[in-house]
Length: 88
Image (cartoon, rainbow, N blue to C red; front, top):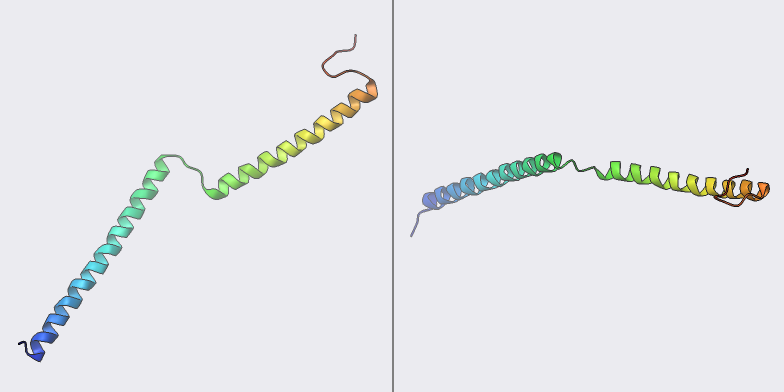
């Protein structure tokens, strides 16, 4: 049977080991995160914000194209020129 002092030393040693393990896991987590960020940086991947910004621009351009197509069709109808044919 262990004495009280032995139990305290054992618990103290156990706490040091646990603390070291937790610190090691934190270090490993930081290293893995750094490696993943470096890997993704090399892959030239866009961020979510960049993607959403370009997606919004594309949507706006599409809406403008539809608007211009309608205006063109109205002008062609006004001139009675079928689409795709040139006036002589």
